[in-house]
Image 1 (tube, one colour):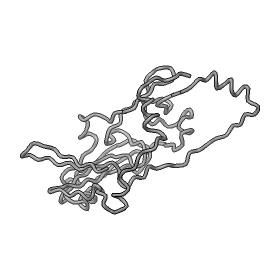
Image 2 (image 1 turned 180 degrees about the vertical axis):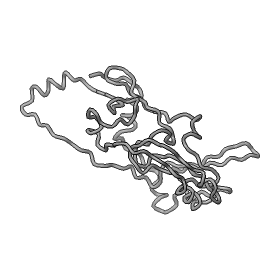
Image 3 (image 1 turned 120 degrees about the vertical axis):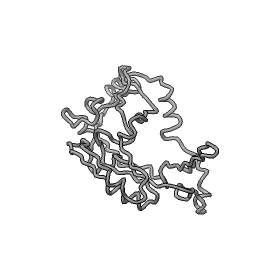
Image 4 (image 1 turned 45 degrees about the vertical axis):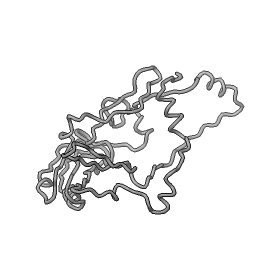
Length: 232
């Protein structure tokens, strides 16, 4: 069992997990004076709706957005192919496996390109002049997905022969991480008068903020400036 000395690992433990966060926003929110993304209205503002997968695991056979692009008010419909040059989402905090090798980091595109890997996986991004027009266009996007076998429990995903989510992560294991001294732990168990084995299952926990991380941007051609409103 290896003892990690990664600065990123210590940063997560010190500033992230289980630490109290001072709340300075409460007085504003309880008075009803909070400013949310929907409260920001800008001239020429457009609205977006994301088309999401309805199956947990499958191969994307085709995405037909031709009908959606022809609907009134639609400014654009984008798929993963349109965003290919932007690259994939990066892993901010990285750890090493117990043997010192890097953790597996499968590519994660903003919009699914080859496969969908969970219910709600984004597959298309619709932009329109109004929210209702964006919703109508999103419903007009035809997504053909060849469903694959899926698992929803970690222990099932780690079993031999389980459906593989990412080809870059054999066995559905992205990280084999250990912290502490395994010899000392084994010695403590060996000396124990009683040893109890039990299985603990975490309940579903949701960080349910008043609104998700969101932002509204506006570009001023005259000044060449880009203004980003990020209330959350």
